[in-house]
Amino acid sequence: MRDIKKALCDYFFKKVEEGMDILCESGDWGAEQEEAILKEHIHTAYNCK
Image (tube, rainbow, N blue to C red; front, side):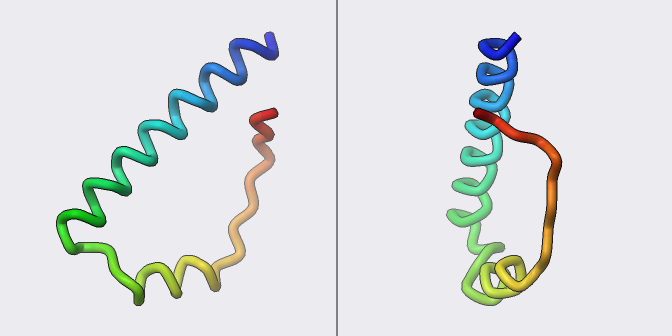
């Protein structure tokens, strides 16, 4: 079960990373958006260990 959980976390992390790369390259993401997201308090119960 732990291996499945790790595989899913790795898969979705890769998808997010690819999406962020596309967003950054398009110019739709910049310092203002980074600053705003860093100030948000986001909590998730998921643990990908």
